[in-house]
Image: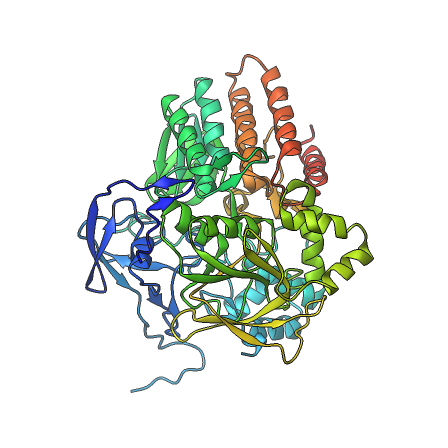
Length: 112
Length: 88
Length: 401
């Protein structure tokens, strides 16, 4: 079953929309014009948009209106882009955040 | 899961236990709680957990909410790149 | 340079922009969402007469009216700083700096978080997130979900999810903790639902109103509350079930729940895991006033308005010259109130700018706000009017008017 709500009893049906192609972590996905990155990925079953930079725990959308920044991804190399606020454009390259080194974190012992 | 291991600040993964212990030990203001634990200092600028930190201070120190906003706001209120600030 | 800069293209911001533009002012509206409408987008509820109130249509109507009146709407632009300068305001945005003598902050509200163990797992989101995904983005947030947090907003949105074919398995309470306030206490939740009972016609509330006339009856009501809950639009509302933890390895797989006492304590031996692929967390709304704070506006703490709100008078003026507020930044109310406040703020700005010839329009707009408030079918707090009175009093003291 498609995750897209094409027909709605009050809001009506979505008409033919232009198909767009984009990549997320180098895999190809399809979106429809007017969909945010978060929506297009969710429609394809992708919930995890990044991992916590330090702990590595998976994260997805939380507020979906740009307040919480949990859905931040890189778009065409630009970091800290909110997937919930950004419309997919054809050919967009989206990548998830990964765990970053934190060498100076309190309590850590420097290795090497 | 121990409910005290509950994450309150999602950005910095600060737990309720950390916050309660810090607030109790230092009987501090919201600002000091934030500086000691990093709660509210992550990417979202505290928009998600700020009211929770306020509640923790009220409950552990008995400080009554006043008309002054307990945790101040500083610009920028959105994370922005140096390019936006005029850098290259 | 524009005469007026409006931050927030929701019901308040757009209504204000329209009023300003109609009085000959040049107006720019910025909003960080990719389209205008603010939290109108996604709102969908049935009026007492059975007709549907569709926020997307309302947003389109306001957007069209604003553009026809000459308003410049810049969507997808985030504001990160506001500075008072000579003769006005400097606003720093991701699209550069804007300057205007008059600034209206109509930034709305943010959702109050209710932390639940496991709430960072993908698939766990705020109730508003699910609303936008469902009604605006038209993508299902999952196959079967649990709503944690029972309040007037979450009940309304749960119905919207159901309407779109998204299964809401049940609505339950968050775990009682130092950061959940009264949201995990069945008695308190029941009381807050009933305080707005007369405003929200529904089978659940009608049942409740009959039963809950007095305090001891309320206690009895919660004590006798059936384990399966009462269903509203086929969604079981289980006030005597509390979430213990959202479970899943890499994303939401279910919610561990238990029966709870009338005051919110877990009843041992009643735990079970409810399978779910999404969870919505609902903690209500708070005014989003960060830009008013960095602008230097004084605040008032008024719980019935949702927390800290910038001080403003009945004409939506703050104590700072050229700084106005409207909509949910001034207190949590319905979109219709926000529109009325926006129109009032627009007239007030026009008056301050010296282009309003008929000053009686302001008094009419003030009355209109009050009228819409009294008529509102969705009211988030029963003591809105007394909260408003506190703000007016503080504004009078603050502004010497």
